[in-house]
Structure formats: structure tokens, C-alpha cells
Image 1 (tube, rainbow, N blue to C red):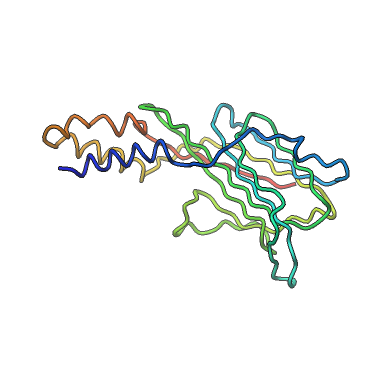
Image 2: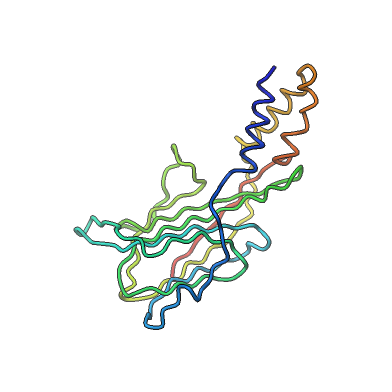
Amino acid sequence: MKTPLIIFIFLFIFNNCASNIEYKIFNEKIHYNSESNRSLLLEFQDFKELPLLINIQIKKMKKISEDEIKCEEIILNENIKYNKENIKIDLERQENCVYIYLHYNTSRLIFKNEKADLKLDFNSTGKCLQQPKINSPYQNEYKCNYLDFTNKSYSIIFTNIPVERVDERHAILTWGTTLSSAISNPPFVFFTPIPIFLTGYITVKNEIKFDIF
């Protein structure tokens, strides 16, 4: 039976090459503008030692009508590794589309793992609405009103909530391949511990809540 071996190889590659994006500690000095009097402040609560990663992109916004906008030139695009510090970005007095994606996966070998992700798209003309999960790769996704920095600065507070719902798909893949190899003939039976060793015995999904001020 070659199927268990193929799945093991896939798990190993996915575990080690899940993302080739380079994440760096945010350098506030690079984005500091002494002439600016508007800012976007990202605050983080209860993330502790979790390996939180933040993707943030800001684009200039053009209003086509009362109900339609267009996101144009990119003015900031950062992939940030959280270091227990809040993130402050100085911006010009203008209307912007803002995209924020927060995610983490502890990836502890053998042990219990935790994961969560949240995607916010500030690129509409309405209030924040949670998007349906059909065909969406994100655990939680919201589409929100664009951010108008002409009149005020904004703060977004993110809070990690340890909900601990079992990641069913991940559990089925891990334990399915484990049991499949356990009933296989040698040499595939010897691969039985590999899925749990790579992905942990269970993965739970926490939640990331947000408040906008």
C-alpha cells in the first residue's frame, strides 16, 4: 500500500514548507512620518508566546459612488512577526483600503497544537459583516467599511480567545493516516507514528476577536 507513504510525504512537505513568505519584526521607524497626524494602531491581547504572524496591506481608496469604491495604489505591504509589541503605522490624511490577516499555528511535534486565523478586509461601504465559509480558506473572515483617515486615527484591538474546538479535518487526516499505516504490511507499518510526530496528536482552533475604535 503506497497511499500511507504518499500521505506521509505530503504531510512532511506541508509541515515544513507551508509558507515561503518572509516575516520580520515591525520597524516603526521605517513608517514614521513627522508630517503625518493620523495613524493606524494595532493592539494585541492574550497572545502570550503564540507565534502570531500579521499580513497587512494598505491601498489608496477612490470613491466611485456612494455604494462603490476602488482600491488602487499600494502604499504599504508588510509581513510581520509579532514580538509582543503593538504596531503603529503613520498615515496621510486620506481614505484607504486596509487588509489585515492574523494567523498562528504552534506546530508542536507530538503534543497538542493550537491554531487560529482572522482576515479583515476594509474595502466596502458597509458595516463589518462576517463572510460565509463556503470555499473560504479562512477560519473567520470579515468585510468592513473602508477606513477614512482624513478625520481620525483608528485603533484595532485583537484578542486571542482559547475556544479549543477540534480541527476536524486535521484530526481525520492525522488519525486516518495513522490507522491506515497501522494495519498495513511492512514496511509501511513502521511509518505509523510519523503523522502524530509531525502534526501532534490533536489540533484545536482558537478564535481571534477584534474591536475597532
